[in-house]
Image (cartoon, rainbow, N blue to C red; front, side, top):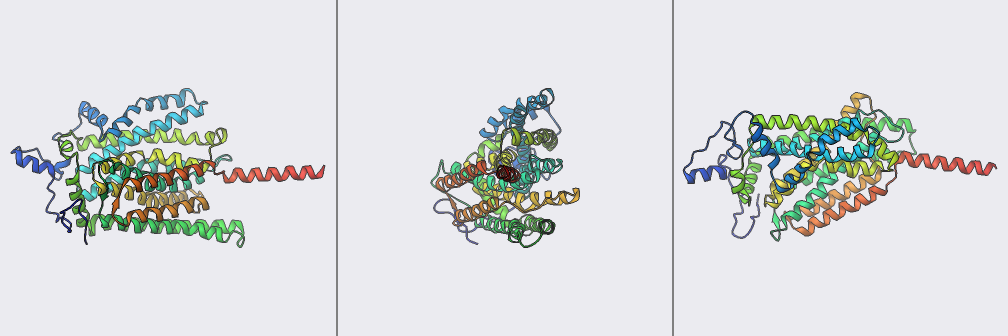
Length: 461
């Protein structure tokens, strides 16, 4: 497999992965200083400490991994405010929603940072998978909270989940990838990334799009042919079968990347580490211990769960009183907050010229939503007796498939620049505008019924 080097004179072959020699080890060897090395821990993630130190933990967590993450940490005072307002002013639904929405961002950022610190301590491929999985915890928690909400006449929570599944894919695939291309294009004309990363990701995106489309096409093609109740039952059964198959596809992808072909990905990520412009700073940064990573994850996951419940409980009032559509809530608002940590991580990596890492996070998060998180909520809904399926609105599915084709075309040449990034962001903004004006299906139906009744009454008089 031929790989393009970043700049002239680069080798056409992937570097052979000889052990796990990092820049930190090289620096220690040159300076003659022996660093404290914990067994089974990569030098890049070695903290030189053990246990839990509250002072070190607070400083390292607040400093975070990038300037963008540090800015996000300024929002930490909002977290106790959001929790307090929820109980002190339970009738102020708009304020609770806004504060909970903002409070979710630093909590998600802490999950992402703890995952990033943990990923530094394990082999490269396993680290990327771990970081991507932990970054998706916010999404999984939100989906689980939404699916357990009781049926409501004003807002269809299942419709919000469906829109959020596709919205999460679109936010990562278009917005995050576009911002990565733009951030990487600030300092260089173009960036190159590995064919192994882009081809596997593009192929799986098409597979995910095809799998998500099957229940929708089946449902809409037989709308006037099969009785509504029978069609709904069959569509749910197809959705559940498709969900199982998509989860199997994701597990095969994880095995492919982490076990059978991990050598290829290891070599790619080692090469990317050498391109990191902030490598010397990362080596000298203080790092969390394993215990501190665990504490950070426990704290952040607990806070995310509490705030997610408060946020979801206000969706009903935002739809009813503020007239926000299910499509805009699911496609745009929910995905932006649940994917904040992963977006910041990927953008920072692209800015540091680690495009393979950034692309792996973008595609990994996208595939986890489409192939695992989305199907998982279908399986959970099955267990709860909820009619959660994968039959989407035609608008949602159409923009998803067009986005997959667009992104696949940009990844085809293994090069990126700020123009392609800008185009991805513009496409996402266009979808957001359309979602803002997209009416709720149940509202449209009730309005049509009301109009028909009014017409009939007028005719009778």
